[in-house]
Length: 346
Image (cartoon, rainbow, N blue to C red; front, side, top):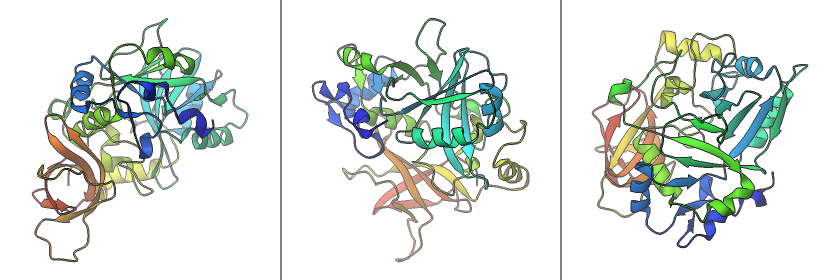
């Protein structure tokens, strides 16, 4: 799919639309009132345009057993219209792809982060061998819209991926708090014909990615390319909750997953930062996380991965820090004090 197809969503023609930048370029950052949009989205009364996400299909009778052999998730017996999350790891166990999957009975539909569909398709096609599967990038024909609602799709309705986060799925485990102590999060993605976006743009309430990201950060929900880098293993961002099955068969990177889970702790851990609200700006992804009382020139303990302005919590950020960073430590980011809320245990 060409970049031009993703460059201009019809939702950007809505009154007040402000385009997003960076990873979310191509859709709206907000439509003029991000705080109200966030409240409406959280209440389940608004949708988010995620038409910049990639959409990949895998069809053929071997599709589920084949994907089961390649990914971190147990997919061989995935029932129709049941959502799952899976990762593809490098041979060393580092996260390379994150996939939202649902099977409609004949085809597995996969949504992925913007710009990553071509690389995923290339990898999957290299791994086909003689199996009865067909892999296609259908991003030019299908688009994603999302809503802060939990619930699988019904037969005859749109293909729907319902996010399992933060509930620990079968075969998974929590590196952060138990389900009952975890922040709430409801989210699902609906697949609609891309040609229908123009009509949908005139209907109902819409929220921008500002609102979606604020809710995601508050829910400690990791995102590929934000909370991950070339060294990330799933344990560091609590992805074993929903995207890894610890009892399934062999897959690339499994040795690292098992070794870290059975013998030790991950080298880094995810934290939530409550930022001082006295400044108007948010830290950029990659900003250094320093001890608040550290001497000048001290080395960073980690980096900010995502930052947002939440309608109740105020300015917040996710950050990945060294595992041995004291859980009671107070930080400073870009000169702004930040209180730490541990997510993944030290």
